[in-house]
Image (tube, rainbow, N blue to C red):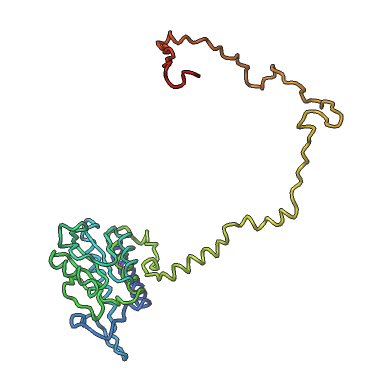
Length: 318
């Protein structure tokens, strides 16, 4: 009926607006800029070549391949059977965040050869799918995945070799912002297909969480936080004023401490001159002192041995 048609048209419009917003984000992060070289298998994803020789990627096909990769990853029931890898530093933070939000396993840094093929290795694993940042840098896991029949999804630039890659997502995998945006969009699509992210419950994670951060940036941010919080010993700032105007403290009364007037020797009123054994603090009763009964050592089965000394030994004369 009309209601069904209108709801479906609304869904199409929402999907289109989502796609347009995603493509705008990819444009802002320069995900469409490739390199000056183009692999023969990547020609299908290239829109045209610029005057300076850089190939421009068709972002509509990038978005479609993102959806295809999300469907592949969602089809695996156990998220721990998916491994996300990045040997290059620009993708390591994005890999860790992707694994955190989707529940899969992350391997950042160098790939130890034999992780997928050598069963005697301590970190041996058998994933069902693998997501890579760059098939050229991550060549070793691609080769091992071919041996072990592991589905390989990879972000591929225009010059990336596609040997051993099952799902190639055309994108700029050289810049830190483009890598973060691609992982962010793929992560959100996976969560949308799982049903954890809906229009009623949108994903409140910012794309900045997936960007690589230089060590200098982290140090500058920490220094800025320290400068904003101020020095730790803020209590010393008020010390000079307190020293300039000290609080009025009454002088020590020697007579009140001694119980009599030191000048005349007369006892002060209200101060007892002698100790009174009957004066018991309120709320307590004076207890009788415990009686100590004499103890008979023989009654307890212990007999003291008689002291023996050798009359001829040393010390007998003392």
